[in-house]
Every structure is written in structure tokens, then in C-alpha cells.
Length: 131
Image (cartoon, rainbow, N blue to C red; front, top):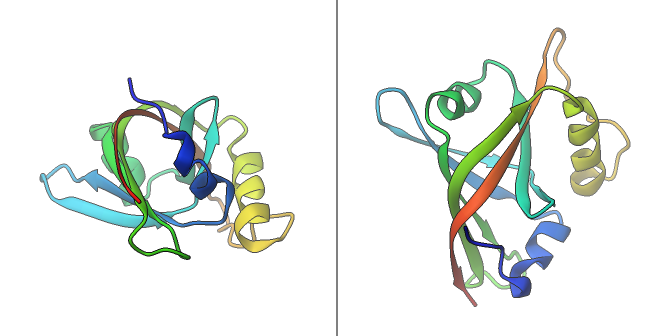
């Protein structure tokens, strides 16, 4: 298993968008911007149950994401790996924490009625970096 390189930890501490690539059941690649942080060495992100990326990850947990340093556009990190945990438990608190980081607000302002939030933990298996 790979670890996030120490010199790129700042990308997870700042509100840097990650671009998450998943594979659809038809084998097509889908890419979405997501908010991320680190939790016990795993990349953590959040979505809503039933969305396309949720269905893709449940079907095939192999994903990749990239983070581009907004201050130095030729500095980026790619992380490839497997989603090792999918949970609804505590997912509302996770998205609220990400909203604090990315928006500076205490609660995620885009909750849809009846929506169930889901948190994913990605185990890095390979990291490619460019500085």
C-alpha cells in the first residue's frame, strides 16, 4: 500500500478540489470534482446514496483522483486505489466538516430533501506526483 507523500499533505489540508475518476457499469470513465480530506491515512470524500459515482464505486471500488495545486498548476498528485469503506454512519458530520473547510460554513448548505449522505474511504495503492 502506498501513502500520501509528505510533501503533498498540504493539498489535503487546504480547500483543494480533487477530481475523482470512477468506472460506470458500462466501462466508461466518469470524473467528478469532490471535496477531500485525510482520515487515518485514507482519502475521505462524501456523496449521496444513489448518485452515479455512488453506484459506480459500489460496482467497482477501484478509483483514481487527482489534486492540482491552485498556486502552482504544474504541481499535482494522483492517487489510485480502492475504496475500502462505504458508510452512511456519521456521513452528515463528515460533509459538514468538509463544508467548513471548503465554504467556511458550519453546515453543508446543499442538502436535498430525503438525501442520505455517504462517506467513502480510499486506500492509496499508488501515488504519482509532479512538483
